[in-house]
Image 1 (spheres, one colour):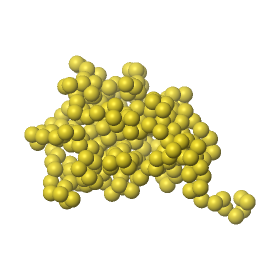
Image 2: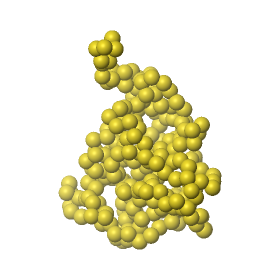
Image 3: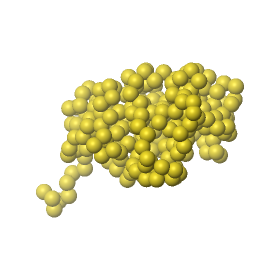
Amino acid sequence: MNTSTKPPTTKHVWRFALAGLLICGCGKKDEVPEGAPSGERTQEPLPEVPKDAPSGPFASFDFEAAEASWQGSWTLDGEVAGKQVAWMIDGATLVEFDGTAERKLEFSLYSPCQITYTDVDEGVTVYKSFTFVRDTLHAGLGSSGTVAGDTVIACHGGKTYVLDGAGTCLAWTERFDDWKSAPATCSVEGEGEARKFVVDGREIEFLDDASLGTLQMKNNVATKHANFAAAKAALASAAPPPPADAI
């Protein structure tokens, strides 16, 4: 499976896109990026532990099923706040239409609650959090998570938290598709519709039995379309009319 693993380079740093999505760029090798997605590390670890390895953080998560759920055509929030784009995902290929032009990107399921898409020509990777509430996709800004078996997985505050059935909480970090963990404090509190995942004093609501999201994430609803042409048409119909002086 394509995880959009980037080869080691001598420079690595992160910067924010306009919508607050995290983007990969260039900088000093050992510079600690503020708020890096999923706790990006700056030192090379040994031994390597891939994310879906039996000893990895997400062994109970079905990456193939989640990746299949992303396939097809969508309209969803883009990198610019308040502006939607149309996506067509076919395997690891993502074509984005912003209402004016298309661009081809590389798509990857980075973790159970984050995807990446990479502009290979520009050398820029964007991380987007997501969760599926049954068949409805929520993607964009905000914390999100999922339940895999008896394990709760949440993307929050630049880290990926994993709470297992025994109550052990770990914060996982990644570098070049090698994941390492550190002890953390997180828990599930409440019952029924009042259940919440609590980490670092912040609460992430259970949206159903298998998905989590903050209010911000809950409002980031993506729409599935029959094909890319339909997604483009929906994007055009939702666009605000041009200002009077432009007509």
